[in-house]
Length: 226
Image (cartoon, rainbow, N blue to C red; front, side, top):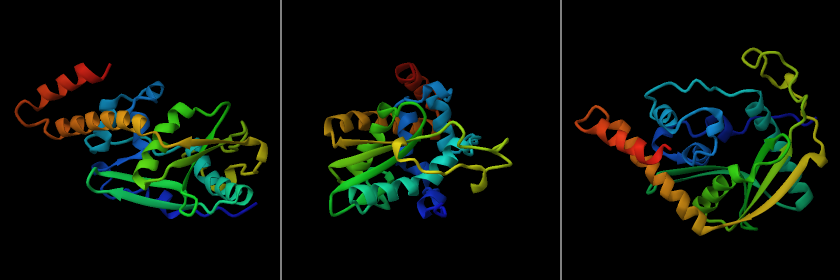
């Protein structure tokens, strides 16, 4: 088994000034694609601004995804003749930040890797791919999913047992699915409209103690948090 070494961008995850920038991983919450997980947009916004603590520190599923990402990237490079390398980019005008799982500059292609079980939810992940295609100015993105086996984790408690030895990182080619996504500027315009609404919510929360700040928040909730 190939030794796993955590990537620099995974370890840092652009923690510096994170509350000031919109990142690709923010989009499922901003677009309310993960409402099933029980976190409201208001709660997510307060966590982003560090008004309230973010209790989620990862779990066995997110950790497995971190472990599998370099293995999947190596597979895609070897089988499909790409040269994907991780990269990070910030847009200080729009206050966007992007950490892509891979970019092949020569072939003008991005890579986004997701682990899943059952069926890959393209609707959940395509906005993130569109976001990265815009910020890196690339026209295509390979969304590559790895179907996670049911027995991937052998530990009892993630809080106590989350190191490499508790994960089955055996790689099975049959678990790979690949989708090639095209840059869709019309879709991204709609995404940016939601991002702008989210930025306004953050501004309202920052000014909550200022006169009429709470009024602005109530208006935003009434119009957007349905």
